[in-house]
Every structure is written in structure tokens, then in C-alpha cells.
Length: 346
Image 1 (cartoon, rainbow, N blue to C red):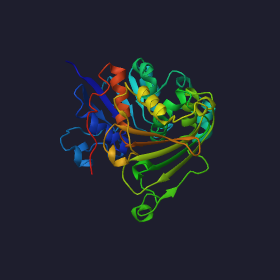
Image 2 (image 1 turned 45 degrees about the vertical axis):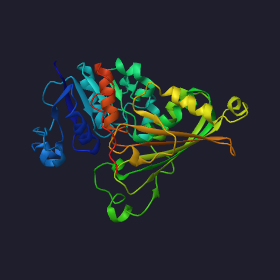
Image 3 (image 1 turned 90 degrees about the vertical axis):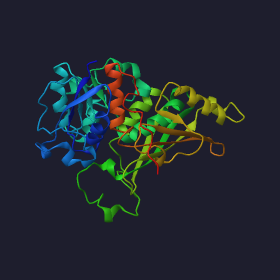
Image 4 (image 1 turned 120 degrees about the vertical axis):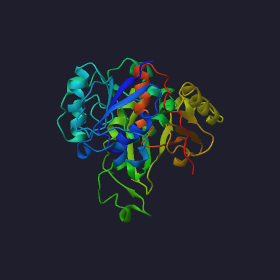
């Protein structure tokens, strides 16, 4: 059986190298080209010794025919690279933010750049398989979600789609330092971030409009969303705690609505192999290194609010793993192919 030929653009970032880690053991694809201008000409295994079994050499540009391309370039640069690949008829999965937002004005306002190819915004499919599985199957261009939106939306989607909540939503998230990327910064310097927790982008994080866009697509009764991210001194993982007020009809039911909410969550995710509705608050260690998301819904009787906690690995389900899950759907493979690894513990 012929295997799909895959290329990874910018393999030297954290998402890019995790794509390589997963795809090099995918039974139905062959990684035939990886790029990274800063390391062009070097062996992938020399730059990343944990990939010692690979004999790939990092190229400056995509230089061979492929069936599907992953772009892990920064925003704006990614769109500029993706557009001609889509025009060639290739299947493209963009891990940047360039095609996630449907509004060009919103994108340009939040990212501070002119969108290089806004004509592709309408045809790009938002790559959250649990919400857009069928659209992803027929897509040429998939916009892989941000790491924070992945956890938050998986926490909130059943409640929004079932009319359980309404009004404003609060999302409080904690992320490991790999979410900031591989480039060196003072904020992620060991002596600066170790033994410390820091809120950042409190005036508005770039993932906020993405969350709001998708929440409103699920329910017109979402009035607004407040999102506060935090940096935690760990390598991987995102823990999100989401708060929303029960809708009038669910609040007026009487009795203990908690079990009904849990049942709605289990029903919503019954055909989603990577989302587990769990019986206790999850920890990032429970999903470390895997494509799983653990979701814990809890109704707070005293305040009348729904509290939902989700845990993901920001580089896998919040990045590379989700991108491979999208590729599987686009190529007609089993959705779980190449992603069966269990979490690593401790």
C-alpha cells in the first residue's frame, strides 16, 4: 500500500519537531522532507537527538513532491507559504493563526499585520475535529486551532451546543513554557519563570477572538468572553478552568442538574476518541505526551454556575497531535492512526 508523502515546514520549532516525532512512526505516511532555514543542511537527528532513528536532512525549502504539508511557520509567514501550496492542489494544515479567524479585520486588529491572502479565509476549515469532523474530511486547507482554544472549546462545546449555559464566559488557563515557542526570551528564562506563576496578556490575548468566534458559532447566547492565561514553570501542558452561568431553562429545572449535565457531556463526546469526560478534576500529568483531552464538568449549586476543567498537552492535542488527527481525516485514514500513544506518567 502506498503511503502518503508528507512535508513539514519549520521542523525546528516545538510544534514542528513534535510533528516529526509523531509522523515518523505513523503507519500510513512517509515523511520525505522537513525544512528549517536556521538548521538547513544538518541531520534532523543531530539537531534533535531524540529522533536518532531518522536519516532526514533538514532542507532550506520544500524541495520534493508531497501529498500533504504541515506549516509550523509563524503567523503571516505561514500564510505566504501556504497559499501557493493550496493553489497547487496540495492538502495543507497550517499550525499558525493565519486562517483560524474568519474576519480579516479581526485578524489584522489582533495580530497587527495585513493578511497576505484573505481570499482563503472562507474556504479554510477550523481544525477542531470534535466540532468540524465532516468539514475537515473534504478540506484542502485546515487551520489548526491554538493551544488555549483547543482546551477551552473542548471544555465548553457540549454546554454551549446543548443550551446549558448562556451569557458571559470566563476562561482561566495555565500553560507550560513550551507554549511560548523555542525562541529564547527573558520571560521563559529558567531563573525568571522557575518557582513562579505569572498572568500575562491580561489586556487581551490573541487566542481570545478565536475562542469567542467558535463559542458564538456553537451558541448565539454567548454575550462575551474573558480569557486570562498564565505561565507555569513546567515544560508541557495546559489546564483550563472555564466558568459560565446556567441558562434560564436549565436553571429552572429544579433538583440536581449535575448528573444531567455530565450525561450531556458524555453523549456529546461519545464518538470522539481523544476526549474523555472524567470523574475527578484532571491534571496535566494525566495527558502528558498524548493526544487526549480530559474534561471534568461540575455544577456549582451555590452560584448557579457551571465549572468545567480541561487538561491537554499543548504540543500534542493542542498542536502537533491535533494536526495529525486533522491529516488523518483529510486523507481518509482512521482518525486515531499514529496517535494511539498513552500519556507518560509520572
